[in-house]
Amino acid sequence: MRKGFDALCGVVRGQMQRNPLSGEVFIFMNRPRNTVKVLRWESGGLVIYHKRLEQGRFEEPLYNNHDKSYHLQWTELVMIIQGISMQNRVQRKRYKMG
Image (tube, rainbow, N blue to C red; front, side, top):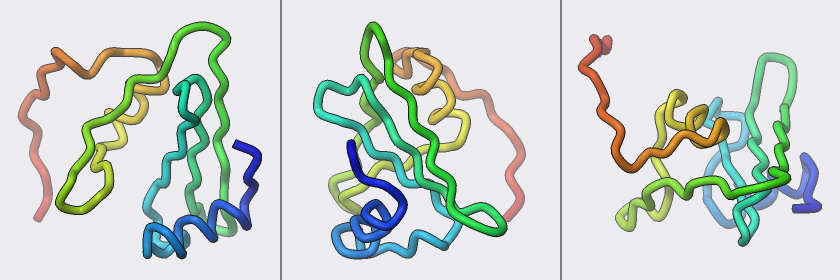
């Protein structure tokens, strides 16, 4: 969890085969899942959000074996960061544009 902007961009490009400037959000958790870093491109530059828990753990999102990645909605990410369990959640239907 010592990596900064350049090293995290290197992980995204080299290991994930993704573009860190695409607008996607990239999430990095340590093994004990008490620290999380979120790398995101915003207009004008990259942003790292870093949160370390003093107590407890972040819930691990569901892993997609086909893509070898995690697919989350922004609201799901916020819930994980805030400590809300994703196990028994109910997602209400919402309109999505094409």
